[in-house]
Image (tube, rainbow, N blue to C red; front, side, top):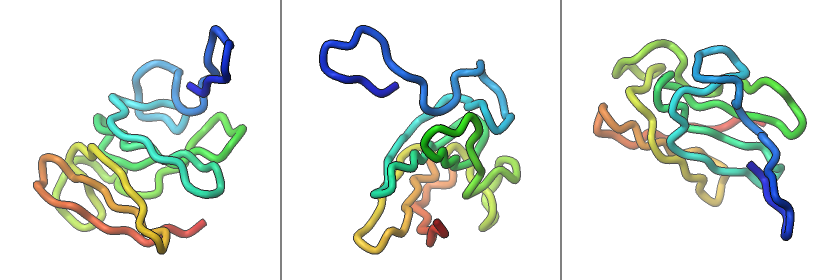
Length: 107
């Protein structure tokens, strides 16, 4: 949710449609980061994927993972934390695979 000073309720900017695997749903979001363009990246822990929401969109897009739980290069196993470096690369803490993965993001 996004809050302004003295506002009593937030605005849902990602998910909020109960737990699930559809593009408008999340399952235990475990990390969030916003890029310089205002795009929201979410570590979707329960769905083993990283989602990106563009401002004003009701659905996100899968940018990493989403190919089931696993340890292959196109899979995650409970992604947990996210970070960007100065060049815009995304780093993902892949919790149960005991690794940090680096991804070049296409905007």
